Length: 364
Image: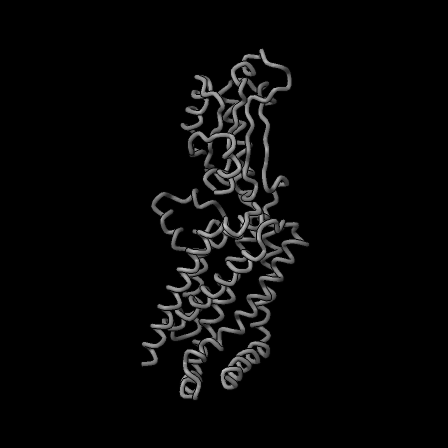
């Protein structure tokens, strides 16, 4: 055990003596969090919409059919009123149109003054959706009615993020990106550097088993990632005003699983690459780009072409970012992210098994 601890100490001292590594793994996450949280926002052009109608009158059905013909939206069917919150929290829809019981009378002008014909309930946990959904839906309803004076009969309700802050969307995405940067990229480069310098062979002939040497090299990056997790959560809470209304235990648990998964990716990359530059390129192209494009970090995955959407299911960051949004913004309890935890756990076990098997094959 003492020999194993010496390897952990060796790797930790190596990191502490390399100021560039410290700058990358500590400084860049803070800069990215503040940059994405304050400076960057995006809009979308596709929203999943459900409809709640107490009475499906002919005029309501015609209005919904007109909405279905609009390419900006995907109609997700009719739902009862008591399922509006569950539908939004589950991500099945980004907006719900709630038609008033007196919809026909309100449009005809025979109802009481101040009555709202339609309420638009929006999921504000992802501002890239809700920022444009309310405007688009209001404009389309106005065009269907053909009377701009009826716009005051529409009422918007934004749940989970009423201020429409883009930081609510980007903080979970930054967490998914940073752990890949710190864990996968830095771990793979660290192991490949030992190969390039010829010191890996020296370490492997020591009395410590190879598996413990690899674990020892991963522990410092795991600790740094935990520090990054704490710093980003604190920045999100106190600097960006992102709520932490869900289960904190679930946030920590799923983050630890994701960190271990990223470490496994780093080990897998190190078995493929023979030079540090190659390890950086593989980590950047194979890991970081899919996170940026296929995880929902920058824009909803529903906006992708149909042929590319299946790829989002094999990107671990997609499940991690979805879970963090549900926990942070929507305030779901632990059981609300059991699916994401299960999928990430299965991915982690699979990646570690493949990485360790390839590493052992290289040693043999």
